Image 1 (cartoon, helix red, strand yellow):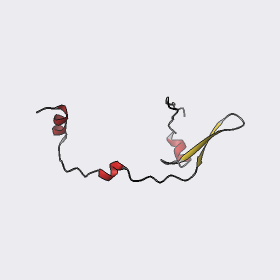
Image 2 (cartoon, rainbow, N blue to C red):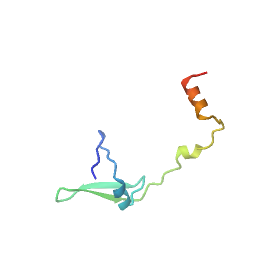
Image 3 (cartoon, helix red, strand yellow):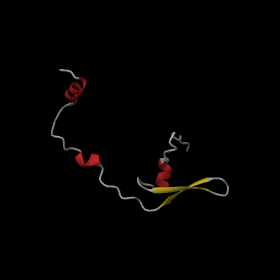
Length: 79
């Protein structure tokens, strides 16, 4: 399962690995190099509690009912 590293050293953990390790957003992992020179990733510590998503809190609260054409005309500056 190859994955590319970003310039900041970030990688995406493949879904198959996340499922196998029960990794959820907020899970902490640690990396170690064993005696054979292999890199080992371990799940550690409890999942950090995350507050409610700021977008979930406001979803559906807008009181302006535009259709797509009206909104696009507004954004494009069309009269």
